[in-house]
Length: 184
Picture (cartoon, helix red, strand yellow):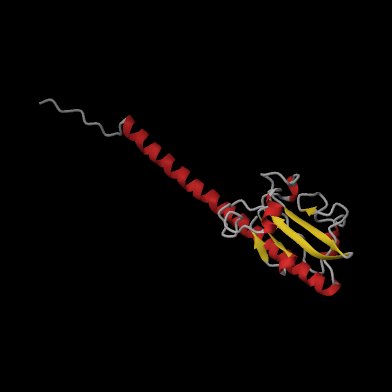
């Protein structure tokens, strides 16, 4: 009696279906992982701003004004002088009030780039001259996650509107007691 030849392997179609399912699942996992990474970097940015706020509050308590942001009226962590004696904020705060100035987690010292474009990340500090005293400041950054609960889309404030033109979307302002006022 002739015996039927039984196939012990998988067909090409079965293999292609399994490979496509694995590819689809891996793309979903990688997408979720990237989202978690960006949220983690945003959390680091918020914590860094909070540490700078505390250092600025201590400095103000001891000196009666905030550190001058310098001739250019603004300082950015994307500038090469951010963590050097060439930065007035560094000179005023390090090491007495903070161990070092934070650098954006996506914009490390190795790849510092010019800030103020829609894709660059940094911290930005600016003081305002009121009767020759530095009594107000803005301290802002750019978050990657536009769904942050404090976003401008949700909280429209004058501070938010003022900085949204330059792409900054989260920060604090001394006029509000150094409280987080916006995700601009």
